Length: 280
Image: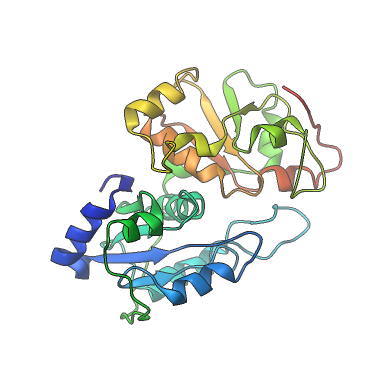
């Protein structure tokens, strides 16, 4: 499977090979943590299971680790098995936020070694726009055993590694937030504004076209054309979620040495002696 698939393609696949697929709904609103599940209960893709950003794709907040720490591996693996995912399962995940949360799920599966996982381009809205079936039925499936085989091409770093590499010329640090948040002009979520010193800004939504669909690989190559593929790239955002679309986009553009700073800005600022920059 490609990393990003179209609604028409998925519709045809489910019509012919539904037993081979697990569909995952990750719709979520940061301002209303219950809205995603409510939307799922009102209607979702046939056979889709709901996976919650805060309950399933994150672990509880602590002193460090940011607003959405990576989930406990054991708990997450159990969740995957309970919705019928094993090493042979093909998985398609969607949200309705341009792929922001769905990319988090995609990255986690890639990190754990799962190969056949893709985003639905345009998410739930694209499916509905095509006129395809929506249901309120909650699927039932026989649990399976998901086995971890960590993929080093989808690894993450912590704040200490970022600090150690601040002056490393062979490392590029990408901030995925909106430009005004990167510059420190405004900060609507976290208590401190600014960015990690040396980081460059690539707003994650710029990997999407004006219609909210993902740019083609050639467009993404052009989007990241100023970045050398020979260097290590570390991507962060506010809490390790919206960085994931940039990770996916960089992979589609042919970059191989890409890592996620999972704690991101909301983790960085919990370390009082860590440096902060504002402006360009």
